[in-house]
Image 1 (tube, rainbow over the protein chains, first blue to last red):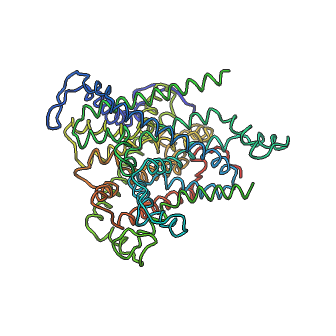
Image 2 (image 1 turned 135 degrees about the horizontal axis):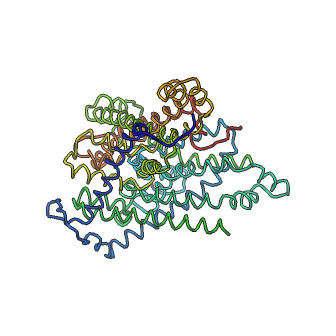
Image 3 (image 1 turned 90 degrees about the vertical axis):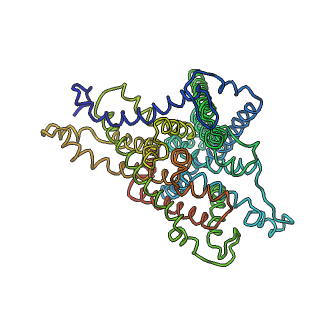
Length: 284
Length: 264
């Protein structure tokens, strides 16, 4: 049976349910959110339909600028750390025996699916005074006294890298598995060391993959909302935390919605920009 | 090179395992302390999950939500993936894009969209809204695995069946379904595990009326730590590892994750 365009109305039948569900429960909520972002906020957590840009005007405050700047900085730092460790790791993994690959993939998937609440809890335990890693340092004689390592920027950064690392590997994995092994073999035959072959052959061949992965991990990190809350100080809060906070605890839905719309635009703009840059480089 | 590779794998493995080792250690403390190395040995915190009504209710809520929302995600993804495979309708790809979008954007956006939607329609807080919300949020996973499954079907098989006079319905049941079954199962498994662990969408839609385990842990964190949280974390990790292990055992995990070649 060849693929053919739908001819009768009945041919569209299978599409009704999925299309209906996605439109009603994804497109409409998305539109609702955009609508709410220009609504007027009332006292007591309510809002009335209106068309005001007050909620967007609040972006012009210094506080908001700081939160946005920090969110972007944190997401870039996490993405960079994950990609720098993830590329050699995934490269070596993709060259490992199949059995070893599967064990690692199952482990990475399990950690990736672990709830952000649980990752936050695990790291706050590891960074705590009573059950933390500093007890190990004391035992080794590296430190005089056990201490709490959280809340701190380092704790937020470490836990977010932990959360995003399995994701990074899984994004890189398909490209690295398909990478032609003869490329590195040729480099090795010509006398390059494995490390040199990696940097001069593998990395350049993957330039676009690396860029795409950086963006994917960046957006993934931008979505982290619990780790900055559980492991950081209020100045380490990101835009995602602020959105949750405004929506749930401050009951300011219009402002939360405006920030969410802004977050979508930032995400899409960065993706567009990076894709454009990637195409430019490819065209040369 | 082998030594360097082993060392590198070991360091990465240690980084990934360390918090989990500490959590596993904490979960077997004899008394209600958050101590590592554990003081004494007790599995009572694991028992707590099933005997303490609060934790048990949260566990049941999480399992029910995950099982039903993964099913809904599958029911949305299957006809869509089938249609895109069967028909030439480029405009229908927009629905593929819509199915992938909630998973690609920061989750707080989908969560807030659904929150405003349920609040506007007046259903906010109803337990079934969480099922629909998660079903939409995780539709990406079965959609991706099923698209992969359909693209792997040899069209000459289908053509042979059609030549013999089988219609779409018969072909689907006798040829297509058996071929995509592994992808159906793994798509369900991925959606199930992720729904079990999901926090923000569940919290924003039913956070004040229903407690799933991640919500329960987060709420409990505010009042201090108990080893039960550690026990739940270990339990969830084991569930995920078993499910993904089964997917790997009965399916082709590297292929599902995008490795097309199956040499080695």
